[in-house]
Image 1 (tube, rainbow, N blue to C red):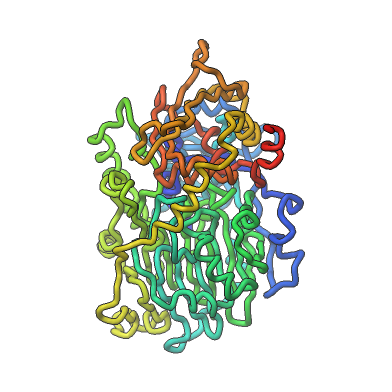
Image 2: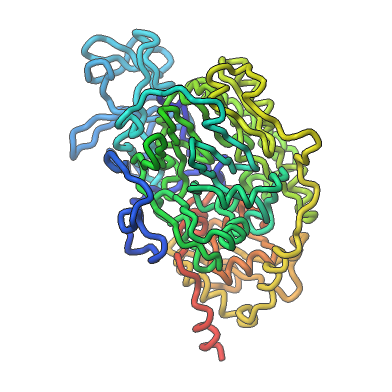
Length: 625
């Protein structure tokens, strides 16, 4: 089933909710992984796998000049090396692309002279017409949807047209749905993106963030998880973790789990940056992490199998999953912006996805220029509505039997983040479900902690009062207190670390980071809780063109960003070689930029591409003596 999703090529900061473009790159070779976290092929498998591994193929590469010269509307393109033809439709900052090949009998499309809106093309074989703005055939109407390609920006602002192969890997070895007994398949919501699935005599858990913060100290759980959450994790036969963001890969949660079951099987996709890249530094003792390839059925037992798929916009980190039990599919797209490049199975038994928005520092942490409070409020309102409409349209297109919005239940509960909490308005899951009900017959479920959906009952009769068992009356649903102390103590310990007694740490850190040859000057200012300069803190410039640290801004023309960061978080990030998501997505910065341009390469590097091992501060300190 084809999703009607646009790729947004706008100068916006990186976010999972906003489709900020990140460069595509091939999967990381196994030689760069740790010995503990190694591809499944090198371990004794817990299950068997079938089919051909899903790969990504570059079909066409446009240079920066060619990308800049794309006209509004329909563009006919050709790969001169292969002779293959493509169509790219541009509407301001939005792009869609497909092969120039009619789905009917493979004819070539040409300009439709009867089209006055500049959106349709005509096949030279049988005059079939395709509306490339929607990728739907309009003549004959209701016939097909055109298979879309993934469009991405490369490192130099060129464009790539990518194809996932095979595009529908779940179609390999298809199985017909069998009847489910009552209680045979149960899905229990724990909190945020964490679901506990009973599948016959196996139990599977998704993305367990059940205690502690995410993104340093910026995100805290909105819901109170069931009191037996740790026992539930310990009973699981397998755990799936979708990606490395700390609201899905929660080391505080896994630390408690590892204390009881360090060998519990945990499955992740074979992303470019390993999901558990920071395991050794975390101190969490997990011994049974399995990295599986994309697009291959992983057979758990005769009735249960699952398949991990990559995201089309963030293939280096985001994944989603299809779980199939006795032919019934459960689709969890998690945070993927364009899961599987825009192709997903239709009419699954249960679909779940994120819905809330607000998982970005943009625009609340920005100031200056257009970033007034009025502008921010209007932007957030518009973006949240667009997200709701997109999710509702997606559900309407895919037609799952049941839909559940999840992976958006977090709150900026620390008192220092009161401003963010008040301005970072998120979507209401009930509003989304009501919108879905207006446009389709899909059954919706707004989950509460401890609530259980019986899939067998719901598929037989969605009105069955026992199909969804709510938590007992009086159950605490929303958290009203959080244990900030232990986590802030860890962050605060970095402030007085010996590293920061030597100003040369600045050069050491940015040399380690490895980002240069880019015309951007950044001023970094360490601050207190209120983003005022921290007494005795560092205030310095980094010129990334030659990786120098000037006392004043250079005289040449250059873009400029000022980044104010809370001292405890920035020093914790620097000391441990962590990604800047803790700063940016965690709302621990305040930013100004001149001009108001999103520097993709800079943010992409510090949020995705930092080295896998932290700086060698021991050697640094020896040289400082």
